Amino acid sequence: MDYTRISLRPFRPSDAEDFLAWAGDDKVTRYLRWNTITSGEEALIYIQQVAIPHPWRQSICLDDCSIGYISIKPESSNDRHRAHVGYAIGSDYWGQGIVTAAMKIAIPIVFEKFPSLLRLEGLVEEENVGSQKVLEKVGFTKEGFLRKYGFNKGEIRDMFIYSFLKTDKIAS
Image 1 (cartoon, helix red, strand yellow):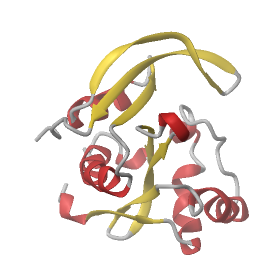
Image 2 (image 1 turned 120 degrees about the vertical axis):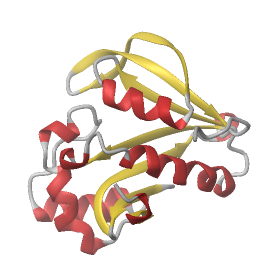
Image 3 (image 1 turned 180 degrees about the vertical axis):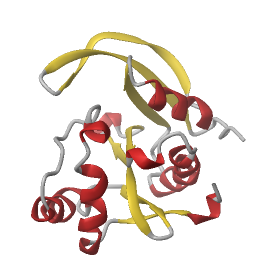
């Protein structure tokens, strides 16, 4: 994989067709809090009403084609020093290091954009080994195991919690 082909950018309404290609895949949305997108119209509405207004949700692009996303959502008020990290990528691109590369691009940008941010947190379901590997390869620290912690797709699930501090070094 030529990682120079990977970029991050804000979502655009013109991404709807590319977005549907991966967000319409149950394998991709299995661990996401939102349901599989089922039509081009639904994809466009999601982009316009969720992705674009989000504080920091970027499209992971391969040759400027949307193949996934990264979101960083800072908490508010006294917890604004923390932010939750989320990401997904089309299943055709799994195992190629693309999300790892995109996260390494994203981290310095979000720490600069949100000056009060000191800590990124990733919550990963126990069986989502691929996502655990992404965070570990970027340099996140696995802090613990949270039993019956996260609600997703009608179930309360066990999760690992990972963190990356502003003072941490991105793994090379």
